Length: 254
Image 1 (cartoon, rainbow, N blue to C red):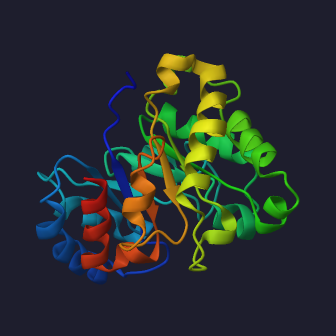
Image 2 (cartoon, rainbow, N blue to C red; image 1 turned 60 degrees about the vertical axis):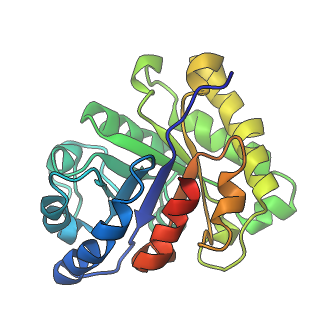
């Protein structure tokens, strides 16, 4: 029997919501998200709003994540935010998001160093992987995602990888309204990503790691994705800024 993996739904607010707006959004989300304790619920506000959101969510079971972190713990890195700065403020951190890869020079190597920094600072990395439209049309999507996962885990002790989460986000589906099919997402999760994890951790531990789908995930299509055996939840972008829609996605996971 496959291990029971707790569903996980993560809201990535991206570059939206001032601290005041973020608290207002949190207040709107709280009463509706608390209805779904069987789902692990995480919100990822911008750095400037992390403290206020974390303070508001104290003594609740809704968790906070950061949208990125730097791989060094301190130093002359103007504008960066480190793991020690985030530790205590949040539980999760996004790593290697496609927007960071495409627009800010993130690579498989820097994603690996960020994963290591997160684990070193007792944060749970959510490693984002996914192919571009050109890569999918060229028939190399499997090779791309395999490489991204494998390189992100290089040099990391298997015992420390257990908190990691993988988010499969086909780049061509992010913010476009064009989602992958549920079957495609499940095949990438169970047929590609989990075997890579198994090669690193062994089949039993790999079966315990949660794999999320992201990319134009909405209230109307969430249930079809979450019904797939190897899709354990979602990484939600724009819909996470709309409380009722985000709650409907969480409800689908429940």
